[in-house]
Length: 410
Image (cartoon, rainbow, N blue to C red; front, side):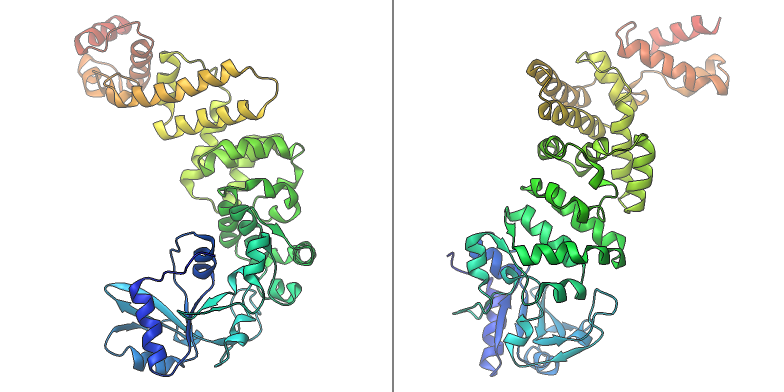
């Protein structure tokens, strides 16, 4: 087991609370990750001290009290916030997100009972590991298991169902059978959870290393991506998703495998309904728009793509195609190499001085206006000139393009 090395300020907080006669521990993901040899990003500190006692201990520091109702005091040390929370017992979860009431306790065991999974219920007091539910054993066995009664944990906050899948995808763990059964038994409660929270968990799962777990939980994951349970060849879809880098590419792969007739409608309805950012929605739509284009590895074709889409979206399109080819059994590997070369060439063209969009054209709308081109025809004329340049039919020179424009006006 890896040693747990806390940041100096976290250790100071534990020591300070301990010196004042209070219990204090780090708990949750920071302990789990430390044991697994992963560097934690957040350090959750819990203590037997009441909120007023926490504030007294750290009265010389700037304090934030927004979470005081739930027993959390945020101490600002060296411009960094550190949340310290009193051990607590949660009341009912009528909104299936936050407890209606919180009772403070001095008993760490009672605080641990409200945690979601055993691997997130391990504490460390600076010297000793406190593991009341064999979380370390589950880490060693690679198991996701609820603390206490799984049905109760999921009814308190159904989002924990998606979190279980996300942890399984992140760590490559199996979900323990009773926990898994409770997940399927209670998954309809996910309807009660805000769309943004469901989408966030699904997105993190899709971007995890062991994304193949999703094929076992399609009935549940439809609350993260509607209709995902209609995918016929999940193995093929997962193979492709694993090869993609960006969430827009991964979503396009899955939507492409759905039993739906209209991709663009699916993109609009599904991604808008799940509150994906407009940039993600636009990228997925551009991927599907590119499906209608004849794509070759010629410079003219790549320039045409760069004209229609941003470099970022061109790379999304090509990586999506690369993943689809890689996941297919009946496409020659030579095709794969061509797509790989296209990605590299698109980057080279985007960084070069070569013209591939109107911004790089040596002539602009004002030039055409001075030639007498009517306003309605300027965009049409510029597009035509750009096509001639990108296909190497004419030089990207102002004088040459003006001559071509004059001839076209006759």
